[in-house]
Image (cartoon, rainbow, N blue to C red; front, side):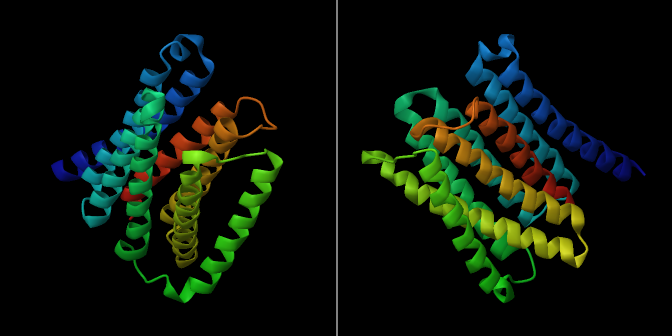
Length: 233
């Protein structure tokens, strides 16, 4: 009974920190008090999704939990370095790239069954997303020049990460594990949308106002969903 009570407590805290992630994100985007300390407030959101993962891993420990925590922590470091100073931006991008590599490897190798039977669908989805990315680049006049051209490589990595997460999520949902499947598919999709807003904000002429809010409101919940997926694994 004690073990069940502890497990339930950890699960409660995991869901609670997922909710706190969203609340903190809304606060630091729209409340002046939190916007005055933008980096600190942002890192509170990052710490919240990481704590979501910590408590989720306590509920369901194992290889999947370890890999997801590693990716979440790398992204937390990425969050810090992206905004710490201009010269640390690409350090942040490097941490995010490592995080995506772990996400991709985890969804491909740690989760079962193999996604190889879905390879054709994954290739089709990849090219559809690339096409949508090109349209987005043209619409918002996004330009990666000079050293920023490395962002093309990051964009391809992000697309692969989304395709793998979405494919794994859809196959899981179809097989009956709807919570696990939705957390991966939605998390991957929201992560990509967030970075699309970020590309417009930093390198383009965005059609929408407050792209910074779009970045945050899609990104942090996406990470919270990835963190919660540990419980559903």
